[in-house]
Image 1 (tube, rainbow, N blue to C red):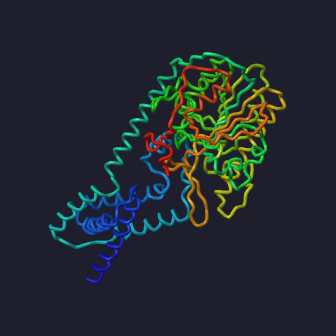
Image 2: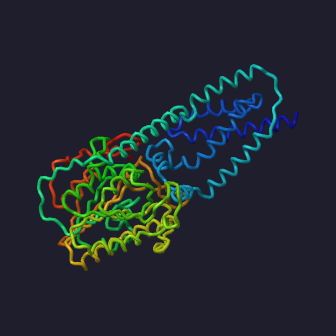
Image 3: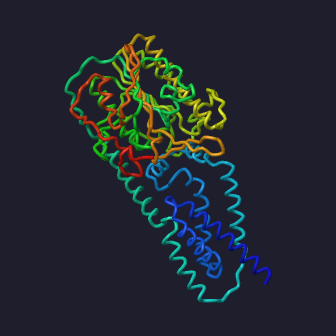
Length: 486
């Protein structure tokens, strides 16, 4: 009898742990009453499912799945379209970096969960009460009805995947389509226009944008035009870049009518030099856009999208050799430089550069600041090279999306997402050969309108472009007003 009481107590404690875990995973967090009811019904399921083998197996399966998912759910939501499509388009090195968000407390959580799982597995209950078995089944129905919107999430994942496959098919069919650009007039054109596409850069960590940390000493003293309130179209690379670089009507993207095609039609030779991973011309919208260039150079070519390549950890200075060679060619040119930038993990980004900051906010944060400083040095190199070549130029920089910060234990961690303004607050600036002042544009601008800026720097006018207003962002697979974000 004493042993049975101990077993019953252990099962009860395990069920409390499991049910509390489920409640925490829920994105909307049920009110206190529902939370308590969840604990009670989960306790019944744990306590009595030992009598029914099917329920016991189901309980163990749910326990394992949710336990594995929980640490990631704190920062990433698998039902978020940007997360799911990023996972589907990632490579092995990015997957490994994704696992790096796990810390000591997450590993401790896994160890504790394992102990509780063993406790549940080895305990036994002796009971022949059929009423209890009926109660289990009723409890199980309630369990599925209220816990974590399970069926709804499965539906969301399916819909997101379905939308993703449709978009991939659209990308594939776009490769043979001609662009719809209509150039009305050409004005004074540059010798070279450089478009630098950054990665995961939040404007609030650049000293030129007011950061307390001196991360951009070159930009701080350089003349140019700085858009102080630029908003990225989306919080994830795969959703953001095509909306920057291609004509977008609501959620319909004309992939073939893009920035590269416009530069080609304007009479420029086009180059795409990338430090990001590459698996094929039409694996993603970015690959499709880059394939329209006259010359395409990827520093990291993968046999398939899950391939791992050590050079993926290299910093962006590797792009400068190709840039320095192409800049000497004697015709008008547009060079797109796609950086790894501040992609996590941040310390790998500055592996060959060094950690330049020693704040008390953690190594991860110091590495992020250093990656911003590396960006500043990268742009300085390009600017000085163009000055040395005595060319008429424009350097345009923007980041695909920002990151939001989470502060725990006096340390700052930065994560992807699309639920706060931080995920969309990105730098956009232009440095020209003939700038004679520093200009700060304070009105809110949108990445959806980037092609207007790009066309102006090319020296062309076109009938294709319209202004997107008010400022919208893609959040949770729908367009909302930027001002509505927290």
